[in-house]
Image 1: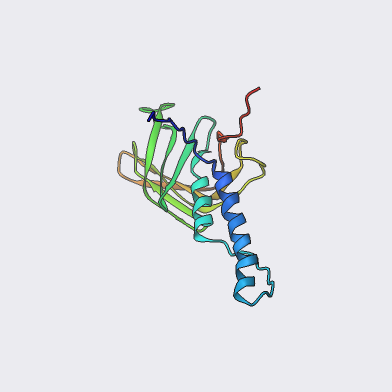
Image 2: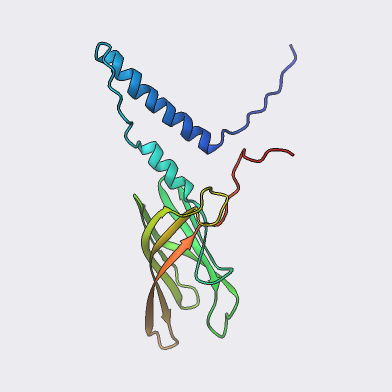
Length: 185
């Protein structure tokens, strides 16, 4: 018997979310009716852990940083946050060179996000803030997600003295490729 090749195309994330939401509504409406002798009690489904995790996964990506060309990479996998800051050096020895500073500590609890980078050339960053939806209507536009908070920059000089400066910042998500939305023309 000849083998038939099948091609499986991954289901776009927004379709998975829609199906999960539709199943939750169906279950809430019709599941409670059968349990209570035909009485219809429509309930709105509570946010599930799966929905919360999916939203956390969606914030993964690149975000603007302090200057044009610099960025923060945020990655959420299995509930763990990792990433790095890629920015220009400010010292004479590394001026205008890109430095990647990986997170040494990072957490994402609900909408609260924080990270601390490893020192590179005597500079490191500490951030604490919150993730929220931005003004952009779709993920393929800049600013669909925003991260607002306080960024502290630490600099250690040749004498091992550390100075710190703090500022309020807003990081905007870079446009993301949206799977399955491109139609051939």
